[in-house]
Amino acid sequence: MSDKALAVRGVVFNWLGRGCAIIITFFLTPYLVSKLGDESYGLWSMVMAFTSYYAMADMGLRGAGVKYIAQFHAIQDYESVNKVYVTSMVVYSAVAAVVLVLVGIATYAFPFIVDIGDHSISNIRWVILLTGATMATRMLAQVYGAALTALQRHDVSNAIAVSMQLLQAASVVAALLLGYGLVGMAVATFAVTLSGQLLRACFSNVFLPELNFSLRYFDRDTLKMVFRFGGVNVMANAAARVLVYSGGLIVGVICGPAVVLFYSIPEAITQKTAQLGSAITQVIDPLASQLNAQKNKAAMLELMVLPPRLLAVSSLSLAIFFIVYGRLFIEYWMNEQYVAQMYPVLCVLTVARALKMSSGGVRAVLRSTANLRVIAIAAGVEIVVTLVIGVLGVWLYGPIGMAYAVLTTQLLVAVILLPVWTCTALEMPKMQYFLNIWPPSLLALLPPLAVALVIEHFWTPGRILDLAVICGLILISAGGSAFYICLPTHRRSDIITSLTAWRSVKSA
Image 1 (cartoon, rainbow, N blue to C red):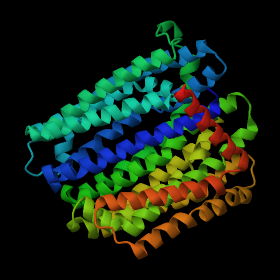
Image 2: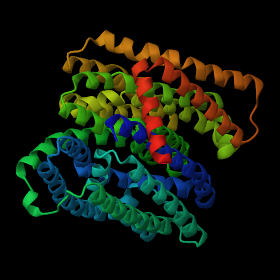
Image 3: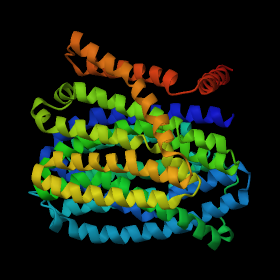
Image 4: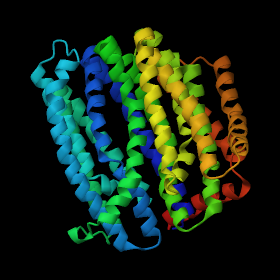
């Protein structure tokens, strides 16, 4: 199958995977809140956010694995593929051991940092220990996930992810029904994660049989290469985790665990919906590495323009839906009592996420061309601005202050600084870049905006299913306008050809 067909198929399967994750979150979150209560749910969110920072200890090796496995596989240099694979595995094993030590420290310290209310200190420590062990397990299998992504086997990767999400949701519900509480949820999460990582290991060896775990492939030059790339990924990952997880922690520490859900639930909604856009960026990274290895500069420059257009239209269309129908969505999904505090946070965060997604193609091109300094500086600015404004904002205004901190950061970094710095690094005209991205994207947003406003005028949805239909209509109109406005004629033909060829293969 051609690279174009694989890319198109990858986006489709990534959308399916992200869509299933959104549906699972949609049904599971209200159940967890009602079963646990506001304070316990907020505490669970804080523990998950707290332990998620262990993932920064991977030193960016997963991103390096995707880049270099895709790059060396494109030129059939399997010696180098195995060097990347084995070197990464050795490092991940050492990192997992370090994470377990950090877990031990966090297990002891967390109850003294956060007010855990009437919860048992012993139970909370078990929850932290198990979630930390879950993170260590994910690290040990990161290279297998990187291999599947590098090979653009997004179908298999998403099939595993969806299966594990369904199993985890069922296990969490069972744990709560049996009365095991937060500890039972943590045990279920660990067991399902372990199963998923074993499946990824098996399938990566099936699709890349050249993988050979022999210590003779451990290579110091390869170690330096992946660390050079991975070091920048650490900054980028740190910035991403600060944006995703620091908000709940800051709100919890300053305002208390019971207030966390007013930020963490809108954050979870925008994070899941933003993953629909990441279905495109996940395909761009290995594709950009392959094109760079093949010295295809024209296609690389196209990646600077087309994906940001599509990402901006898709993510801003979701922002339109939440701004127009967010109040009803929260009321029907959660409860009317949550609307007043959650809706403003949801509106601000959904726009912030959309702005960040619009820079996805730029980041992919920078990673593939090893322009790492730009990514590192942008990530550093994201971390500093988000934390400084976030702490001050939460202190003064509560959860909405954290949302405005994230929005301010993305306006500064994703919309202005990162594109300007990228154009400078790649010697591209800055004004030409902005004119290539935003006028077509904003024009393509007019149909979904019109659909949202017309429906609002003529139809008042009375249940959550009605809102799902409206959201679908908005996204369909956005997809159609993006297809005809944001893509040149030859790319529209490529997509149609790829989908037609794929359907023919499936029929045969």
